[in-house]
Length: 571
Image (cartoon, rainbow, N blue to C red; front, side):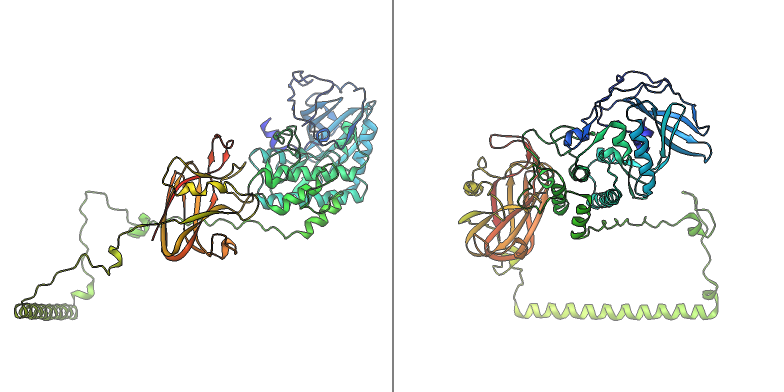
């Protein structure tokens, strides 16, 4: 089953459906109990499709080893649902794996499935899993399609976490372009779920079940382009947040909190790309309206392609540099083929090079030795003469030389004193303040009082909720600031603090325009921050960009937050 989940390309994946004709523990004719997924049906959760109310026909009595058209040998039953079954099979003629959907010829959906499969086969777009054959034979209707063993469902990718920004961008771009091409030919998907989108080993995104998937389940829509566009928006939303954009859980993903409504992806998880977040909201249905910051809704895949084209292109991340392994001399390099000496074994001393054994070599050695002796003699004589000179001067003057360890002009021995804080004010870049009334508690010498941030759903990085939060301190006059000691309320991974020289209690410029004094990061409840050199300023901005996860308290619930109890600046 694990192998099937990684390579599943079956158009009739039962993810999100409740079986209508068989219970979860019922065995198939080949003796294998079928696995049932109990997640909410994607189309019903989105409310953009309807399902026929039909009387399910009995599934064909098939088994592993059965052959269709003396060519397709059934190997493993993947799905048995609502009167049809899906199999992994082998095309013995071309010796390749294929997928097969089988229905009784008298099934209420047999004709629509046959028509949908033949229409999808005529499209021939490589971005879709290809329909290879659609046949009615011996009271059976079966559809044969590609089987991609190297492909991975988006469902499996999201189980490990949200996609990287570039991967999400590639997914929504390729899926939107493929669906736009399909709709130009009059074909709709109507069941575009995370299980219907696959990524191959080469990084290409492919879609399975075009038209056929909906026909197998009797799904139709009065607005097929809007339905597929909303489905693309849901796929992008899930790729960015690892959450399903509706209240019900589906496809192994948790839904949004009850009563919250449809909130933007960058409000669900920190670090979400703003442009992709807005694109997802433009595609999703939101009672006919979108948030004020969003542009007009996208109602067709073609409009999605146009909106993506207007965005700045998202480039792939730079490849990480891996340092080469440390060079180690091998045994062959050490001895040019001779084995390395064993410890404790005395090695024979190699004779000197032949050049030094000659008469010229001996003369050269004696000349070098004589020069060394002369140099040593001259050096000793000069040293003795200098010492005698210094001793004579000392006797004549009668003075003693001492080192003044308490030189008041020495910067290295100046005592470090804390700087007095005359006032403070919370610095708000955008949105509402954190706790503006409590900034004075950060320098009142009371460790039990503190100023706190709000609690955020994701972290440790505050962006994009906020670029940061902080307090501007007034030192009364311009003073040299080189370090700070900051006591924190919550430990954990991680808290990042930066000190900047500001121009007033309410700085006019952005943080990036200020002079940085220093920065530090900790996982404990205290930060000792020291800059490279002192900066002279009257106003100091304490700027927090990362906060740890902390449990709930009297002021806020559990989440990513921090509180400052005491701040001390030194020059």
